[in-house]
Amino acid sequence: MKISIDMDGVLAETQKAFIKDFNSRYDYSYTLEDIGDYDCECAPFSKRTLIEVTNKLWKDDWECISPTEDNLRRKVKKICEISSRVDIVTARMKREKQMKSWLEMHGIYEDEHYSDFIREAEKHDLGHDFYIDDNPYYHGKVNKLFLYSRPWNMEVKEENGTERVYSLDEARSGIERLAKRTLE
Image (cartoon, rainbow, N blue to C red; front, side, top):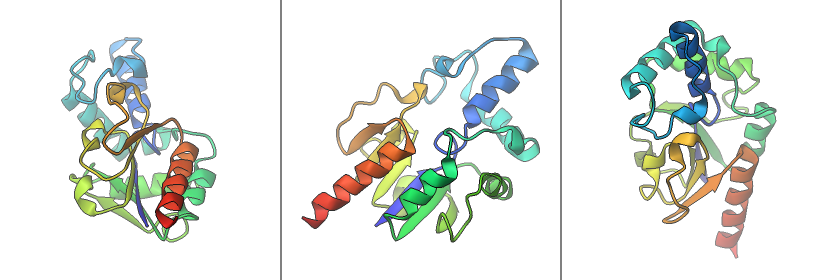
């Protein structure tokens, strides 16, 4: 059983770091909820601005990016305990070194907590059995998506292999439930 866990928005609170940086730079008071959709069409800034600023944060200030949840190391380890292969996956290019350092800073180590760190724009082509991701565009494109609930994916309904989760523990429980059904 292969599991893909997304980096930005599922493990790393990249968008929250972006909002904090954006607000301090331009004297605004936006919140995470202001990112109303994945392409930022409802947001007071463009997707391009979000990508550029978050790339810069990953390059120069990755230590300021907080984890999405407390006890992240324990939660990732618990997911690893139920699978033969867990990959941490990102579509973000040229930040692998910083992202791996961020994972290590939070006690998450390759070979102990995950099998591989994969950079891939088309994550759905990787062939994992389960995906834990905040990107709503994987809805209907992968067999089983545990959609990590964020303000930018609230319009997605739980159908066509998509199940909304509010934590990594919920995703793990869902994977265990489905794996058990397969074995019965």
